[in-house]
Image (cartoon, rainbow, N blue to C red; front, side, top):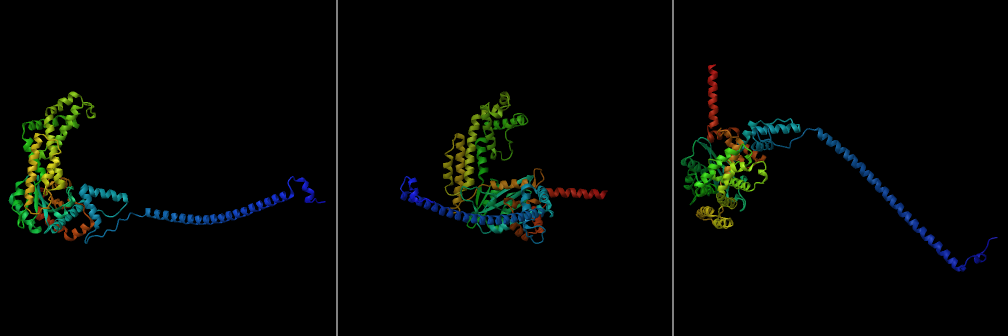
Length: 520
């Protein structure tokens, strides 16, 4: 028979109402827990559905990316199998090659030489598996000459009726065969103060050859160029009389053309007059020559003095003075690494004579410090009102001796005289370049281009002289070829250069060949 709560009540220690309340609260707790579990389950199911949806999306994206990757791999495979295609390169009228190709060949030829440029192009084309036809070195040479002649024409137009400074010099090659070159820069194209001139700042206005350049020859070229471009504001050159005297007779409007002396040449002459004629320096030079011959093929060869130039010796004296200071240091430091395999007796025997010139070398190096500071100042600042005062402040910072003070005094006198002549132009804010070093370096570039280490004389390649200042662009090629044909370039060579030494040699051999073949 079922028992009632009254019957079982004796089993509980707590009153029945307390037990009932506890049981009720326990049931409610389990019910709340069940509700929370249901909510959590619903949330988890919702998250699961969301994750499943994201999974489907990611799988779809993965499939799309895999398909795209496969397509790109296939495309890359096809591209690898295809031959290299050159960029679009329109051809100038009447030419087989594009302007970009021509400009690249010209720039490459200027950098490494024409034959080397042809070989380099073949190597590159073989590597790229290109089968297009390449120009031969003679063609590249002809292209460069055409651009050079065109630049001369365009430069004269650009310089016309502008305030221009000329840089004039002539270079001797073989015997009396010389080339006269004139570079120019417009005043508005001058770099800002503190920046030296670069090749790209200048333009070539004249290139001409002659057996000799007398005053009247140079004057004739000056007048002819003035007819085409107008008179320059100033002419910079070395102290050559045949260059400066005709320039001093020129007029620019109501003013005389300002004739300026290149500071490097002027300072070389100052150094020569201060130290070059002394008995001590002559003894030093004699020992220098003997030392070079004695050690250049021995274990002391790394101490060999610089080669002495018979021409412009004092323009390159800083290298000799730097060498002398270096050797004196090693003589005073027997444990230097450069002396590791050299016996002290050998060092003293061959180079010890320099100790007797220690004080002289110190004085001469101070003189070279004056030259270095002055050239840096003029190359970067040019000549303007107040140049003498500003240069004097810089030279005061140097450690001077009695000899170097003489160099300072003469240098400041030279700059002061140049500044005084500048005032004659009556343009107070005018700043002019003075140095012709940039022109001399162009001569060096030309000789390197032509490979004139042999005494072969100037050739028709002189027509390319104007291209040495800056790189050639495709746009310039198009304009140059439209203005200058091959026949025009050849006419320029014939008129301006005439029969060069190399041309006369070729003619002599050709006449000999024809005569001997006729006899046979």
